[in-house]
Structure formats: C-alpha cells, structure tokens
Length: 245
Image (tube, rainbow, N blue to C red; front, side, top):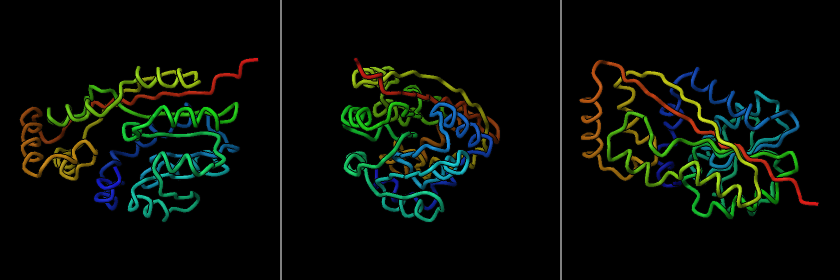
C-alpha cells in the first residue's frame, strides 16, 4: 500500500476528486453514519492526504482529528493541512499509539489491512460506550468502468461486506450495512488519465502496456466523449455491543 501511494501522493487529490457534488455526498454520509458531533475525536485510518479528515474536522467542529496513513509521501501531504494531526503509521502502528479517539473512519482502506480481526478487537476495547466505527468501501463486483482484468484484481483483494459484518459481530460489535449508489459522468480523457495514474491500488500491478490495452477495452465498450460512472459506496457502521451485566 505505502509504496504505491508514495508514487501518486502528489496527484492523489486530483485523481480521486471526481466532483464537488460527489465529495459533498460522501462527506454527508460519513457525518450521518458516524454520528459525528463537536465533542468527538476522530481517527481516520488510511486517511491518505487528509482531505476528508480536514473536511470532517471543519464540518463538525471536531475536538480533534488524526489522519493515520502508512504512506510517507501521503502523510507529508496531510501534514500541510491545518487543523488535523498527521501520523505515519499502518494499522499495527496505530494500535500502538493509544490515541484517545471516540470515532474511527476506515475510508476505502479496509482491503489493505491483513489482520482485520486484531484491529476490530482493539477498537472494541478502546472505543467508548457511544463510540462508533465506519467502514467505507465498495462491492466486490465493482461497477466502475474498468477493464476486466482490473475488475478481477479488485475482486481478489476486496472483502465482501458480509464477511466484514461477520467479523465485526464476532469481535463484539453491532454492525449494519447500507448501500449508496452514485452515478455521474466524466470526460473519457479524464477517466483514462486516472487509469494511467493508477488511481486505485488494484491497478498498480499492471504494466504500461497492459494499462493501455485496458483503456482500449474500456473505450470500445463506451461510445462518445464522456463515460458514465455507476459507482456504489458501501457503508458499514459498527458500535460496541453493550457490556453484559
């Protein structure tokens, strides 16, 4: 994860931006499902360049917000933002920090965590009674206009939402899932530039020649100058189960 994102840190915000409307929709869903309020202290695990960490801090007036990111270059970008604290650490390193968080966000990062159940148990023990965890991810059968080999690579790495729900329940959480479809369009050239930039880590293993062949495959399947992006976001919200009397 770190090596790939180190290489795209300087363009990450540009390629993942999509649009202001997309960003507002994502932000509103996170605020609602995390039940954020000004007293909260947010740990954004895998927070990248800190864009959403800062937006959440500013939108909700959070008491404190940490962007925890294993990529050094991403972390350096996050450190440029006012109002948040940038920490270069992976999930294991995060668990050793003993931060006083009350809410935790894992936005499009859960597939990078190899020992998920260790993290779930840690969060179950550390979150306060009204604490909350939110996982933001995508379905295994991704609908983004990618070439077939890229979709297959995504499926191999992406845990199914039912798997995540089962893990959380087994580790002491009450968990629920919601699906939020969000369709929009981009100019083909913009989308193809994103693919060339390997904006998703699942594209990192493809050579330049394979990427160009994949773009040709996408281009042949979508006529016109624009391309439809039928995205679906999966939100898994979890709260610690009440202690047994």
